[in-house]
Amino acid sequence: MMSEPLLQVSSLTVTLPGGAGPLHAIMDLNFSVRRGGTLGIVGESGSGKSITMLSVMGLLPRAASVTGSVRLQGREILGLPNAELARLRGKSMAMIFQDPLTAMNPVLTVGVQVTESLRLHDRSLSRRAAMDRAAELLETVSIPDPRRRLGQYPHEFSGGMRQRAMIAIAVANSPALLIADEPTTALDVTVQAQILDVLQRMRERLGLALVIITHDLGVVAGTADRVAVMYSGRLVEEGDVTTVLAAPAHPYTVGLLAAVPRIDRGNTRLLSINGSPPPLSNRPKGCAFHPRCSVAQDICRSVTPSLQAVGSSQVACHFPYGAAEASRP
Ligand SMILES: Nc1ncnc2c1ncn2[C@@H]1O[C@H](COP(=O)(O)OP(=O)(O)O)[C@@H](O)[C@H]1O
Ligand code: SF4
Ligand SMILES: [Mg+2]
Image (cartoon, rainbow, N blue to C red; front, top):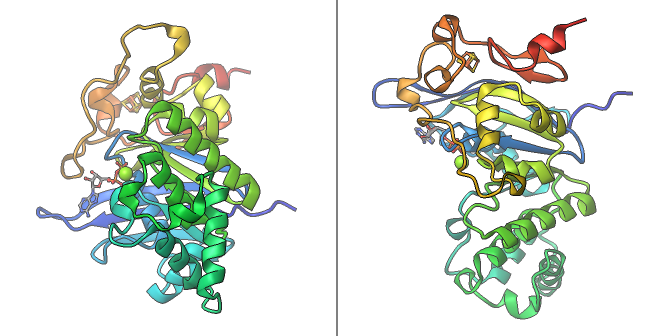
């Protein structure tokens, strides 16, 4: 029996109110996450990664209009009443937000914040039992001396320790899906690797599925099995990580990959894609990437490419790399 994916997002469209008319933040997004799998969502800042996963969590502002379908464990959750979504959050899906300093409450000890999230879903848990469980959780994410740490405030934690505490809070109720939004940004390289390692350990231990949002394709390389590349509110390439990294088909993915520092390239200057992503209010016609694309043709300026199979990946480009070889008999 083909088991259905843990998370299935179909035709997701998010429209935000803007001063000069509605802003199309996300357009017709399709992707899935399998049980126990890790999906990396990659793209420059402003490509819609956070909005996508906030809409899965049901955490977008009220003024946002969200259409399409979000199925979690086979159940449609888009448009569920807030109270029902609140019940799912923590227990079925949890998210580690982009900025751990603002995501934690500065005036409550870490212990209070971890136990609150435990007791939110289990009212029968005594304070003492919750504290014991909280200490276990900190230990699980490799925070040394957990008893003492529980009595401290977030500002007494280093960036890496705070991120570990956020992971502990997120997994407190053993969710089936854990979303980590830029979990390693602003951490130094050694700590980055440790945090990614903790996330992978949680995935294995709890059997959860992981979504890692990052602007750094390098983060995806060592952690994810699938990758979804986003540009200006659309999916532009999706596939198996090994395949996409070895043979990226979308010119944007090629550009992102060239920007990843690699030891074997020596100390050469990093290549980067010229320019920056367009604002939502002024998205170029056709392929939104065309002003920055070195292989753009006339059709790119008028016709928006839709996703199509290129090898084992899905790519939205009129002239994907590797297409000619892939279609050869
Ligand atoms: N509440 C909002 N109102 C209007 N525009 C927004 C809002 N939140 C985000 N945006 C815009 O939506 C786009 C995608 O944002 P986001 O999902 O945060 O990008 P990413 O996480 O990939 O950096 C950006 O252009 C951002 O400026
Ligand atoms: S559709 Fe055209 S402009 Fe867009 S990425 Fe492909 S080649 Fe470049
Ligand atoms: Mg973001």
